[in-house]
Image (cartoon, rainbow, N blue to C red; front, side, top):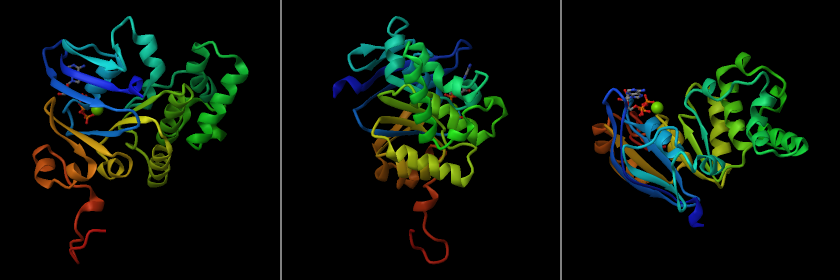
Length: 251
Ligand SMILES: Nc1ncnc2c1ncn2[C@@H]1O[C@H](COP(=O)(O)OP(=O)(O)OP(=O)(O)O)[C@@H](O)[C@H]1O
Ligand SMILES: [Mg+2]
């Protein structure tokens, strides 16, 4: 289904202070792929996601979703198809209750209130927080906020799920729950993370960014076992793939 294809071509972006954050990046993500975008702090991961979502616009090059180029004019359509969970859940939650936050997107599409309620309940069920429906988002714990932020995107039923550092700040159980949720989605997924063990479990392809450029783009196995490459990009082989210091075995 080519309409879910995301095509990034010769993308360049500098922040207003002149900092060149994205330098000539090109790749295509196909329907159903799960792609991890990894790289050291400041390598350009969040900037790249913002360019894909049309939160920022490139100086040169373009992003196409299916046949549609991301521009200010096409944003409404793009946002129906791509749902993004931000690095900081506080950027996503702003309503008085979790219900209202998760209902915000569906209400914007003028769905009737029964359908909105069903979507909210389904989304909260998927992320395991149906009991928080009437709570104030700003009073939730970090992990609860992240689950609520993911639900605000799921309630929109996007074709493509984009997540910036989804496991940061999660305790081991919440992290495991999130990994299982991600594995359960048949959506096209783009996930940035420093949690390379999570990337190993949830992504079949990995793009490595270094100083705003693509340092590697390959299968997860290929990229995450390449110690030399990861080291040169300020990263390490995932813990679960490192040899046991005592017996030398890989788990
Ligand atoms: N608003 C801004 N103005 C100027 N430079 C910025 C701005 N936001 C980010 N940058 C710079 O752009 C580069 C890429 O930042 P970005 O946030 O995309 O990195 P990242 O890979 O997501 O890092 P992290 O792993 O820390 O989240 C960095 O050098 C950063 O300092
Ligand atoms: Mg970031």
